[in-house]
Image (tube, rainbow, N blue to C red):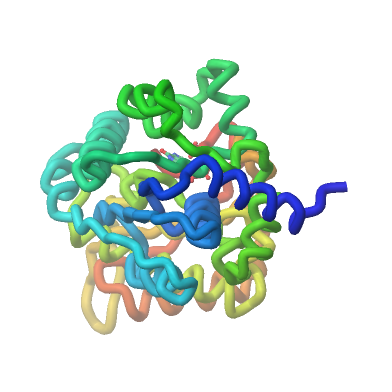
Length: 316
Ligand code: XMP
């Protein structure tokens, strides 16, 4: 049987040996893997720089939450506010692949600009990522990971033995167990997955701050309702996105002509396939009522009942 406490002790010992007094840089996103990684390095007494790039495509209040979470755990993170740079580069770009490319490249540039000369780099690569990279799978996910984790600069550092991947033997549930034994809060360890390109893949067509703000409001209401009704951890992933098509409605005494929001909640094992969730109608009703009452710019709420395949989980 797998003893997490023993494993943690060995891991920390190994990290101390490898790192010594060098400074280690790591990127954090607020997600499970990078959080466990940063806290683990901190626990090992390593001189760690944790860098968080805010690309302006995060959810409502997410950046402040991530900062608070790390602060509570005694890890100070460096926040790079690059939102204007990202939104500027994305202005007027509607093609999904073009959007992804801009975000991916700008992310790497922004991150490495902040890193400067790194003595060592730590990555939250998990065992499934190792297998995926090794078996040159052609899925979208693997291409993206190749892009993010295995760029030239990293290969160079790797060749010099300067890349640390302490989670590379672990599956997700083991990372969570390790995180729990490091004292990381349950809420953080059981967050839904969130895509690297953030809300961009939930905002079809070109991206504007107005659209992102609408998504943030709708999403916060939906996620809040799932938590309130005890459904957040029953679903694998959930979000509200934008359908930027205007339809006619009535608000107050006036005709409205506004966009729609799509709610999506899925269960999945590995994100390769997914099924939509039959949420209690009460949750959907309360979510819809609040969105229609509170979110300016939305006059219609739709629930996405598409399986993957053929649909994907995200909209882009
Ligand atoms: P799709 O939309 O392809 O998503 O069904 C499958 C899972 O992957 C997430 N996703 C991403 N994660 N970078 C990521 O780190 C990405 O570019 C990306 N695109 C999709 C998505 O949220 C879902 O969990």
